[in-house]
Image (cartoon, rainbow, N blue to C red; front, side, top):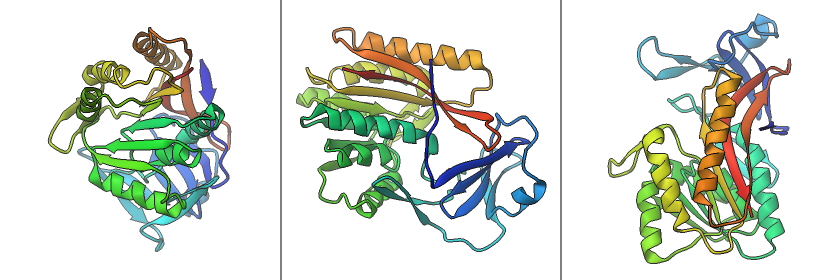
Length: 294
């Protein structure tokens, strides 16, 4: 099982502990909850107290609120490689970018360029578009699907910021499974598919998504829109894993499902976790993945 950790100058996990993480996102330092950080923080309390803002979870219920110690922009721009994108502290505690995913962006770009032919990519649950834009910048023709209109608007802003307005990207606000089934009926096919599903969600028309009960149906549908000469498949699932044993089992399960989906193809499948390390090299597991290369 692989463990991948991103290299990124504009992002840094400075410290973690007491159920929190201290992160630098471009010019600003934020504190966010981190259930895995059950150890003591390494940096002095004063370093945490000078953070620009902190997301504080509500005593009752899943939501919380941001508390800022000094005025900072509502949104700011970060960069990685040839991509530029907006970061914004949201009411959910998210900021519009998942830094651990940079490992996948690098892989998508590398394999797309190496294909040395036109690649049609389908990005499902595409969020603010960084995987989509990475592929487009590397030469792919991309279709980006997300159920959130707000996320798709954000992704299109990131496209403009990155200077990729001329790249062929189709933006779709729709439930992922509904879209893939319709594409299969229309005979549309894709050389690359990226899936980054949440544990729970709703489509724009109220469609229910539950990872445990919906993922296998979606993978089966994706198999029907895969081209005869595929390039890559990426399946990434977020987790709040505490124990190593479960990470390995989850990665093995994703790998097995990809093998089942690709039973008619010859592919190299790798599985593992994406993780972040703080300044004391303590690891925070972010997600598990399986990815196939043909």
